[in-house]
Length: 247
Image (cartoon, rainbow, N blue to C red):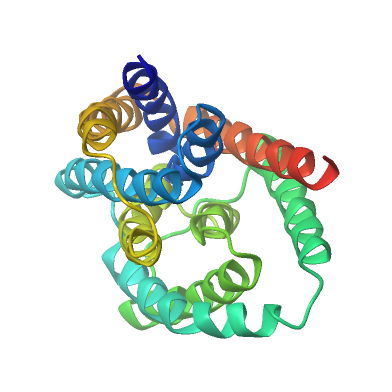
């Protein structure tokens, strides 16, 4: 019964969050824990589901030529390199203060997604895209490592704010999330056993949800609708973090 419910929840949230390009682990982890699943199993499973979902979504996005490879690869490399530095620096800082700062960023970024209409960015040179990707990767990797949250939460709004097509911003971030989630999964998998029945059901649900979300994003939703979904997701993340900080 628990496994079936977990599968339904996984499908629903994966569908929605695939559109936003941020992965569903941040919601699935507390939901799985609330259902009585061991915290380490919940974390490892949810992060692996992120990988599965984003692989399926990225395949479709690549077919539709929505992934900005010249931006994505520098972001991925630099974010991966600087994430440990951010994590190291955070050891000497008050974690609650850091998380409140992240909440403030989300509360700034969400209305921007909902109401701000940046001028569409024209195709820039390869060198400029690489430099821009490295700058965004440094920002997202360092802050993501320092706060212990996914860098995708930073990457999507920053790309949209810079004038990139919201669909391309979401698709590009989805590709990056594959690797950040895989890294997190490998870390948690060493301390938590994976429940094969839970993983089997939720993996299928995650793949189906990713395909549904990617289809909606590429074929059914307009750019304005994707921005709306991203804004709502960011508000949801902020609300969950505020709740966690206050209880």
